[in-house]
Length: 338
Image (tube, rainbow, N blue to C red; front, side, top):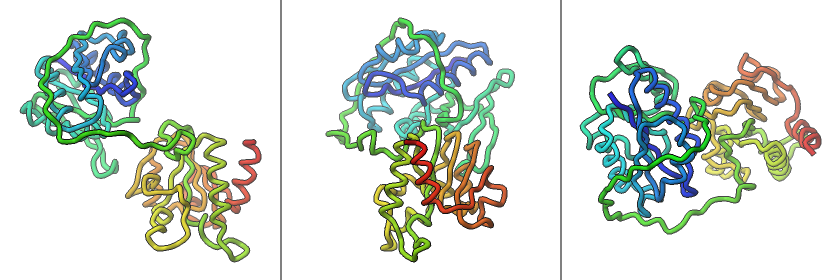
């Protein structure tokens, strides 16, 4: 049995955190099975990425490099992944569960005559078998399974394990030839907000979640959306926190109500939104009902600010509930942050 880690190289030539997490999983699984593992790098160039993981202990590092592979496209990525998998001959193929790989892994598994499992949180050796732990139904159900089909492609869910960390070291890259199909998709550029304007920061220590209460009438009988915007953005800048929102808040734009202009459905946390993995969470003007709290399952320390002492957060869903006005609390916190 042999194992292959497939990773795409970022535009700066390095491997991102999800790839390093998958590398750690591949290394542990190989050790449990007492078999070697290879690494396949897909991108415009692989030299810098190979040096980055040179001390990981891989038997071989394969590189599929071409200018067409710098950007994500189904046709080119699938062809590159298939080529590396066939050269390696691996029985188990691990990939980071990024959006780029999740688009192609099913097709690659079909081309190789194998099977695929996504949202994998653990893969372990059970004798000569490989047991796979994965999520179902938006991370609400966890199942453990084994499969006899080979090759087995496993997409490791980002954020579920510590990334591999090792010293850079020189590592030879074995080139793999692939006929890159002519793509009908052409990437003409990338538009992204400046780093200071970004409100979604997956690696932040703290997640601030804003509820619809920020846009409602306050004690004086009038809404203060501009003040809410100023307080929230000042806190995000001062604490370098990430921003989440309740469904009721992000849906308000469709109802014609006053909205926070920087809040979109990308920020939504909960049953129909994201499940963030920040270490700490602070909910403001949220009630803490189950559809919202389900998005907090990976957050260890939970605090909330709400005027209602009987809100959902008070029912054992928060470690600390501050019964206070969020406008006053966040103004004082921002003052302390300087």
